[in-house]
Image 1 (cartoon, rainbow, N blue to C red):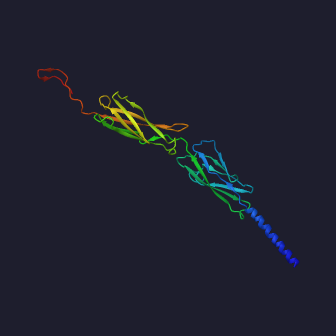
Image 2 (image 1 turned 60 degrees about the horizontal axis):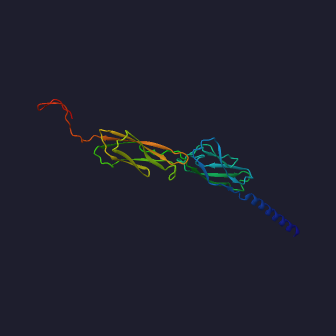
Image 3 (image 1 turned 90 degrees about the vertical axis):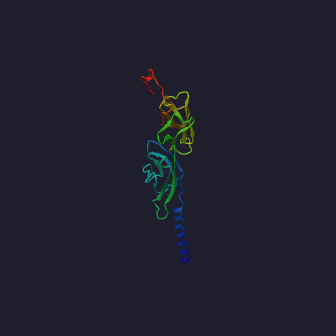
Amino acid sequence: MGTTTCLLMTLCLGIVSVSSEELLHRQKRVWIIDDLKIEEGWQGPYPRLIYKIEGNNSVPTRFSLTGPGVDQEPKGKLFMTERSPEIYLKGELDYESNEKLVLIFEAKYVSDEELEPNTRLGVEVEILDINDNAPVFHPSTYTINRGENDSKGEFLTAVIAKDKDKINTKNSTFDLKIVSINPKPTEDLEFFLDQQDTIGRITFKGCLDHQKSDKYTILVEAKDRGEMVQLSSTCTVIINIEDGNNHPPTFTGQTVGNRIISSSL
């Protein structure tokens, strides 16, 4: 009996000892990953350390990072080495192409692969917009024809611009205005621009006179409200004034009796 009891106690102790060691190896290793924010347009120097993932790195571990920006388009912008959980930037990111990148971080435990599963976590990278796009007109040139008899205050045309920067920010909000008119209108003629969101409506007040000018070229500017820098572009509005039948014929020259020697209209 004594020998049997001793043997059983030894076996039990051995089982408890193995279980405790296994539980120690299986203790969960926690990796802390915050959502990342990277400003677009960084032009170097590269590589640039942007984030280090914190966690228990007390055992040999191999790390990997996959997804858009790493091994998927846009490829080669981000990377991580196998030996360190650090994320590096090695190429310029573009907000207009990718507003957000969703990556997969993996930690593979080399020493006890059979006892402990790998860690696999998602990493979200938000790309921050900078003011790198000027508002652009579509099209860049407008040509219209108007007659001399058009009523003053009449609508002439509308110009439209768009900005590719982040919507509802100062970078994508812009103002429209007329910056030049060639030739300079006479005192009895004015051109106006009324902006409604991204559209500028051009009207006039006064008289369009073909004899004074058969064409007006108006330059319209769109300028954004970026905080660090303001970007702008222009479009051209060409207004052709068509000659109207608003001048009666006149006669010039000398007459002999009832006969006209020369005349002109």
